[in-house]
Amino acid sequence: MSSKVRKYITVVLFLAVSMVIYLNSNYVINNWNIVIIMGILSVIAETFMVKIPGIGGVSVAFAIVFSTIIMEGPLAGVIVSAIGITFCRPYVDDIGYVHILNTPIYKTVFNISQNILYAGTSALVYVYLHSRFYYLGDIDPVSAVGTMATFLFVNTLLMTFLIHFLSGGRFLDIWSENFKGMIVSVAAVGLLGIIIAKAHDSYGLGAVVMFFIPLMLSRYSFKLYVDMRANYYDTVKALINTIEAKDPYTSGHAARVGKYAVAIAKEMKLKPSQIDTIKNAALLHDIGKIGVNDNVLNKKERLTDEEFDIIKSHPSVGYDIIKDIGFLHNVMDIVKHHHERWDGTGYPDGLSGEDLPLETTILTVADSFDAMVTDRPYRKALSVETALGEIVRCAGTQFNPGIVAVSIKVLQRYEKDIESVNREIEIKSKALAAITDDTETVHKKDDKRLQIDGSQDKFKQDDSPIGKIDEAEDDDKGIA
Ligand SMILES: [Fe+2]
Image 1: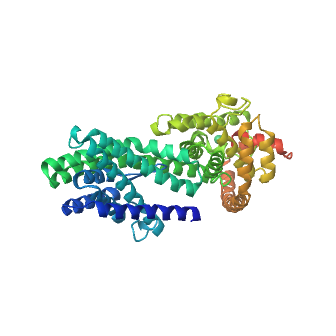
Image 2 (image 1 turned 180 degrees about the vertical axis):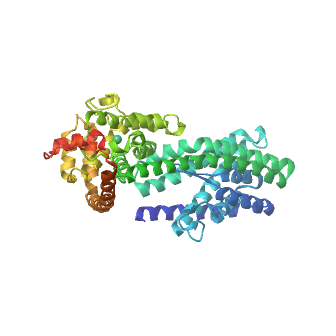
Image 3 (image 1 turned 90 degrees about the horizontal axis):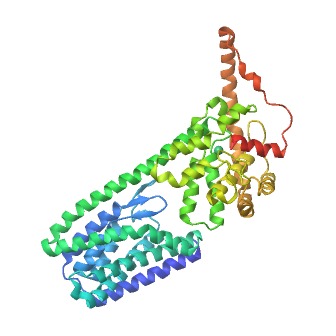
């Protein structure tokens, strides 16, 4: 943990302790039953928080905290909020359920302090506004909106500072992403908080529990949607692995392209949503190879024009596969155009220059770089230096000249990683060659017996050494 993060967490802890001291000396709790029941509901709400990849967690805990503030005041609201985050078991990971005893202490301290601060400030705003606008109703709209806005502001601000200190992203970008991501959720959950408080007013604590059940059910159906998305990505990853596993030379290609493209996008300080799109597009970019015959896809010899045309169909096939899947709409065009060139001579549509989205041009550089620096069946890998030289040379023809300099700066960091990738490819291809040799011996015996004609010999690779330029073009011929 960096000293900046440590200092930041210390400041947040100090503010949270000050908040508790202030509330404890200015407010009292009359009905501890409310605190106990709402505390339990808050633990349940935080436990069943829905984790959304790239956005974070969405929980209904704010509804519980907000209604507690209305029913029993600021001190009760803060206690309920702190109980919820302290005793929840929010998710399962490699070590099993994550809870207070197996979470790093700094995370626990930050989470509890953050909850105390958002609940405390929201409660103080509610009390202040309600004392002025009480004539508008038991729960007046001005203080309700003010409370929700304060929660949204404080929560996203505290989170943004942490992400900023951890990842170094641009403060305003992280904040606006967080803010936008939470605005609808906070409004909906805040309204539920008001309804729960109203129900308590009319029917007592039993009604609060009765309202809580459908609330959790609605979160459950939302969780099913999130799980479905995650399952979809897992399925796609499995498909990609299946395609890549057939050829040791392309094994791990999508993941590496994603790593390079995301690093370039981060260096360019793109928005988190754009970075997320690039990451997903990288994972999916060659999904269309599912529709390409294995014999063509894995052919070691030079491709015929006909076979090259088949390979060239994979971006369009990939586009067709994902175009009807709602949440992949932002990646389908990138998948379709990942073999376009800046000068318009790429495929499938011959788009050029500014018609190509920035995300696509980043993916193209990452894709070509990985193809050049990894071993191929017909040639050894180019050195990182040579590959980067190729990217510079092709700036303005194959690649977006505006991103070349930053790409070079980022990609040269991966020299060591690339060495180990190629060592792995060598081991895998040797293992595969040994298996293939065995299989071929068996097949040759069968061939003699069955008189099968080995007509693939027609398109032998020409033996002339392939120079730098041809290598780059080869990579463009659907290898990447
Ligand atoms: Fe491709």
